[in-house]
Length: 425
Ligand SMILES: Cc1ncc(COP(=O)(O)O)c(C=O)c1O
Image (cartoon, rainbow, N blue to C red):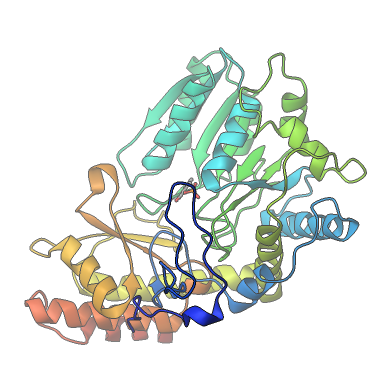
């Protein structure tokens, strides 16, 4: 599987390398200082990025259009329509923010919050912690509902906080906590927020297009994601949708958003049909990629895609439990897209990940923060969520475990997974 990074292309087939300021110029016939880019093949089963379909890669390599070219504007409209389907929303304000998932998080929060606003934030992992940090940086007051990592935020605790906090501008929750694999139920939260006059902000970075995200039905006011997870597109865009209620809050701000780049009222003028005012140069190739990734999602069908994620995760988990790896997330609230399991006692966590990557080209993730060294995070998202990948990973893990004497029952994990597939409806 490994590739020879030292391979040099024929010097004569390339134009001379231009010298950088302060550098000696490269002689005309000298080999290029760096070789052609040939990354090693990887089976990406970590917390992201996930594998990308060849159609998406092909879309990215198609020729550029200008970012105000009418043909490109049509492509933007198509992306918006596809995003509405995937977010299950009618929100006119549905766009792709330039930047990764964190740009979506930051855009949602800094546009809704003004200095002095109170925001209740569910903190049960890395990304809730990050949301609370952004609220503070935007001049807001974050009231944290903290629960042990892996647990969900109980709606009763949230209601209690809403009752006692006074005027609350927004509630911010992570729908899919990538650091723990917890799957936050959202159905009850929207109506609860409405009763208390608060907006609901949801992080769907690890859920969108992998598990249901029903923005309108659940009453979510601001929902963002990232392209590199269940959408199976390279990292670089953050799909974002705002309800009319949230958009009215953005437009009615008394103070300017402190971020110029992420000021959604200005970005809205670029994405709004009819206006298309320049704000920043759209990342054209990424928009192409997202369009193709979304086409693939819609072609498969949302429900079929969710079922696929459920099936593969159930089989993987059946195998992992056989190896002694118990899920970190609260029972009944486990994400199928991000499978976070505790490393069995006596097993060298880092050595397993290192062997998987170096010898088998398989990437899985380690733990973050307090879970570092204690869990593995296995992503089965988008193109990575396939039967054959589950089989490959479990067989490889069994081999590594067997070599170290960490399991006596060679083949049991794979058998458990295959049984789970056989019994899946
Ligand atoms: C739940 C969640 N929110 C936000 C982010 C931030 O996204 P990015 O790393 O793309 O900026 C991530 C990244 O893994 C995530 O999992």
